[in-house]
Length: 392
Ligand SMILES: *Cc1c(COP(=O)(O)O)cnc(C)c1O
Image (cartoon, rainbow, N blue to C red; front, side):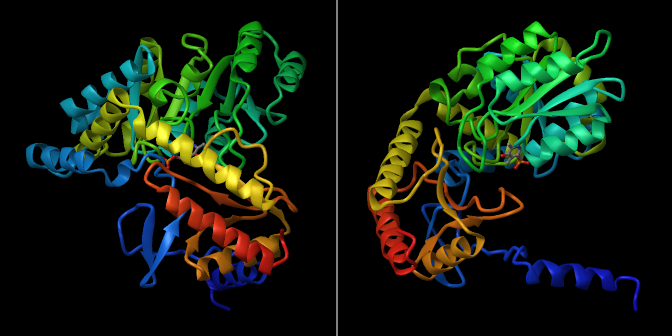
């Protein structure tokens, strides 16, 4: 036995238990349709909500920034990697989100990994939502704070947990996803913020799937619930609706100053490239000046949900464009996804352990770049394949 043989064994187990994820390779840019294995497929899997990943204006902004600033930032932010573009972007985010200040990271995952451990430590408490994203869970682990999990979408359970656990002298942080990525439902942030206020607990929202989707011009969940000033830390990503790469946190000025001294991805990992920074800025500018893409996204998602419901599918508890098609069984879900794929519809199966056993589903991500015809095509294929597999 070689000392690395365990790797093969692990992979074999993943394959045997149906948990091995096949990685599809795109041969085109992101868009309504993509090419995979030489075949054209309707793309209902990407997070490119507004189509900005391949927007001509955004691409141009990136090209221009590369001509002026080069392709790399050349250093970590705290040494020589902070360019004037980074500062401008941070000002723009703060302005867009009606927050005092913001800090840009190289990704959303890094924003969570970097910020949470800077806010709480060994002596402190974190109240973490049951369905939080993996990057929050890992951020909480890195902090070494005591973790208390509260029930999904339950401000009442959050209050009960705070009441039981919160003792004086310690710092406390409530952390939750804003929009839950597998179900598309929205956290009751207003009630949770009130509980946070009552028990002197900071509140942190990860708005990765709310950015560009909720609120006026896509300002996000805090704007959606009119909670400006009531949420201490807003975290977001630039890789979903914004269409590029990177992440951020926004909050009061002192907090951002502090994070620049403490957050490890800021201190120990090189800065976001100037081209990316310029592209992000352009995407936000587009969102800010015109909400027609946002409206199209919502119209498209309403249309798709209604179509699926009329055919006889259950689209779960989604309140956002994220469209789960609830199937239940793991095998049925994987069969449905495979057959749709053969029929030209790229739609990802979500199974255990990403969701609970028996809650397997296909998750559809409609976007502003899909046409009505595209979505009709998806609906027709779901009908045809669903009948064939006796799911509807
Ligand atoms: C996608 C996602 C992230 C990670 O963002 P990246 O910018 O892709 O690293 C973090 N939190 C949530 C809730 C997400 O959905």
